[in-house]
Image (cartoon, rainbow, N blue to C red; front, side, top):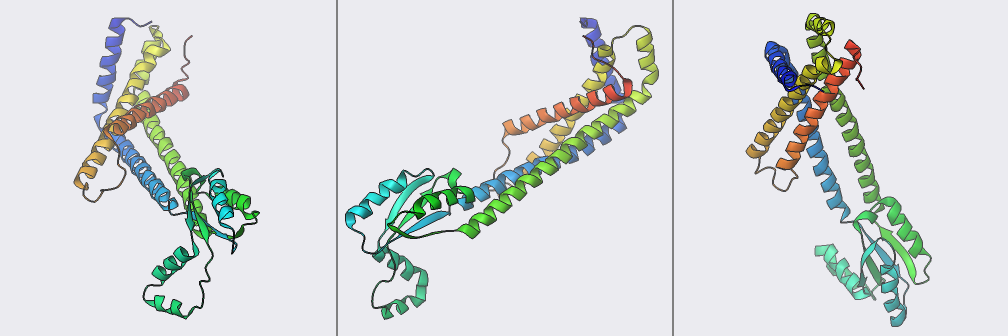
Length: 294
């Protein structure tokens, strides 16, 4: 257990090491800050793209077309049956006349062509609104397969192509975010680790003296770890400061977009401190061969 005087010495040594290597530390912080800015912007972009995809999914529904001349009682019994299907949030009945009105509106200026029809050719149908978690290709296929065997149903239509596109883009964004996030994470650790290695190399004589006089591994390691954490803190603060400034300047253009809250920014800075800790610890373990004491 370290005494109070030892802790004061370690704190002074950490700050002194920071000052002695101002140029190296400054370059490290700038490189880390740039990497972390990329990670932060990517994260915010991914959140907004995910929100955009979720909004697009809200337009996915299913139309269940019915056989002609179904008795009114049979039609009425279909609605509760459809609502009991997992993944179906709401059901709306579309009569033949309503379907014709919808078709007439969609034709616009060409609606006069419908006057040539002798009778309404459109069937009655139910429009199914799906729950948020059921707007995937697999879930839609499951609902379709359950309804397809009903004798009252003549056909089922849904936006399969649109669902396929959403599925592909969702997967691509998730994979891209994972890969880039991992690369930036490892890059930040690499930068801190190599900075600490240079510090260790320049302080090798001091470390040997400390070992000769009986300094423990923890005592030797602590200033370097504190220095790495300080680098992570400053780099994260700089990155979040620049991002906050950019969001403030572009606040009019960012209307409606998801941006980081102050709490999320603080959490991001905390993550940067952890990155500094990991990078420093990795460098100390590999290049000094120091082992944790029991």
